[in-house]
Amino acid sequence: MISIYTDGSCQRNPGRGGWAAIIVDDGNKRVLSGGEKRTTNNRMELMAAIQGLEAAPKGSTVVLYTDSQYLVN
Image (cartoon, rainbow, N blue to C red):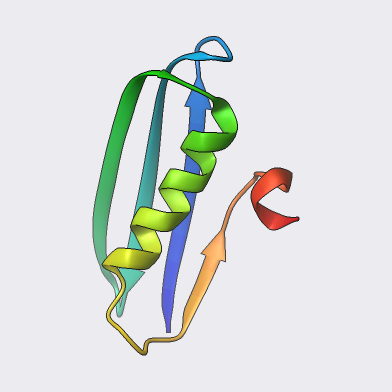
């Protein structure tokens, strides 16, 4: 099983924002991150999850952790 921890944020909404995803697979950790000059908080939350899931090996079981109710719902 792979665990992916995600977060995204913005200084203003819209404004400069960033996202990160930490992928934990069998004790190995990989960090992905990025950002945009003009974006929204929700977009960065979604981007963290998308990038984390795209980086997971195809067919793997994934548990995604997020503090974003927008993403969860």
